[in-house]
Image 1 (cartoon, helix red, strand yellow):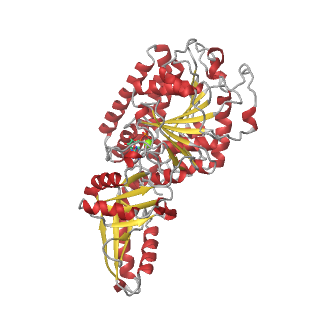
Image 2 (cartoon, protein in one colour):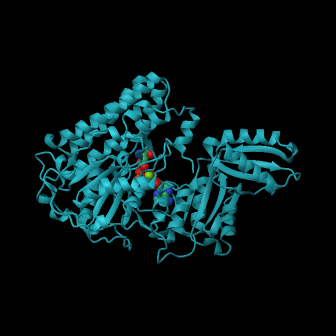
Image 3 (cartoon, rainbow, N blue to C red):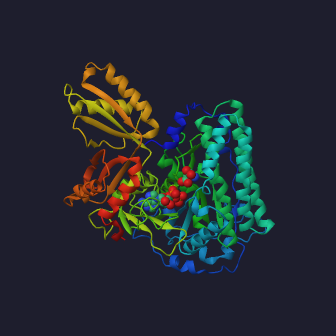
Length: 576
Ligand code: ADP
Ligand code: ASP
Ligand code: MG
């Protein structure tokens, strides 16, 4: 699936030239981040911890590599890679916090925290509580997003630099500086602890400004520069999280994902090379985990084999979390966010949406593919092959169970599970005369869309005429797709076979998801009937493959009403 950020940047007509500055600043040249050690001998216990201390991995016994069953001895003085990173004043974690010590029997958990979960100092304190409790019994890799809104600001700074607006760049970086420094002051009141973090933040902020000014001088924003700039948000949040963990007695080490996640060079939607990524994670993370140190890794970013920074796509820290989980063959990956797991519908649109305890891989990936913001659409792909369970939990209500996603949940009922929707899409309709036949018109329509390239999200049937061929594509590529269709059909040997090609950008797509739900008779008719009785127009509809989804297209202005109506008709409030 194409990524919106990439599509947007393509629309901005940015030229994809290699960026020599980014290459120079690639992973290979990057100095090691500092390790934060524990300070307190008396870790305080909080109420929240009890709900994690007993939490078992989600029923999966990982087959561990032999490296993982090694019993870890004391770190040889000066020889272990991490021992040299502890500042002299920091007590070595092994002497400090016996319960955090790594050993072969400890399960391994990857915990990803989203932007709102690390939005300010008080949120980061919650993260520390959660990680600290889990780290008592498990090896932990923490994957961190940028603070909420920061990536948007960085993208804006990059765009402004492409337009030559120096003042806007300075203002944005000043705002980011204040936000991160405020968090650093609140999290580390003592200057001694705060200073190395402040230095690191300043280093990243100055680098961001430099990259923007280079773009101003170049007179254009390349995709490589956009990645290097937009990926700084995660680099700014990890030092805060790692240092906050250390403040509370949890030894931690910052690791930049450009050292771990090796990707192709598709800037804005890079894909990892999993074999190389696995090798790097084993080499870099395993020794840290074996020493009982929590690895704090940047989400969202990676780097090419040459070390050029890339991003995996907007909202993709979820994917970073599952890449890490798959690479290390973790026992469990948990995405910590701001809602109680996956809900029966987007809570911003359906007030009665409630959380779903269990889902299958298929249900969750259908939801993610078809628009649910709570899961990046590539998230499940990384885990499926290895059967690693995925949990979605609420950072702000960690005692609630959230959602567990496994290959085949034991208590998974057949039937509708949830609704999802997308409004960043457009409907293209090709009206065919009888001369060529609808199947051939459809074949040519799909070939033309593929050449654009436009990712066809849905091929629904028109609710108005069997002669109409419909496709749903991302809004950002709708214009070029309709131009290509008009051109191709006009040039075809039988131009009269298509009488009109039209575009409707004011639409939304709603999808009903549930394992084998279309086996439940009359379900589609019930939903369409309920919409009709509310006078809601359905423009087109489609059944997904393998009976597990059903989508329909409505005018964008009716999206909320359509979701609420379908949610009520399917009695989804009773699911949880
Ligand atoms: P994070 O920053 O933690 O990755 P996101 O903002 O990307 O979080 O995703 C969580 C948000 O997704 C929720 O706050 C909610 O508004 C939205 N959302 C949309 N659909 C759903 C759904 N079906 N279940 C839960 N949340 C959803
Ligand atoms: N910070 C990135 C974004 O806002 C990645 C993420 O948060 O998942 O897109
Ligand atoms: Mg997200």
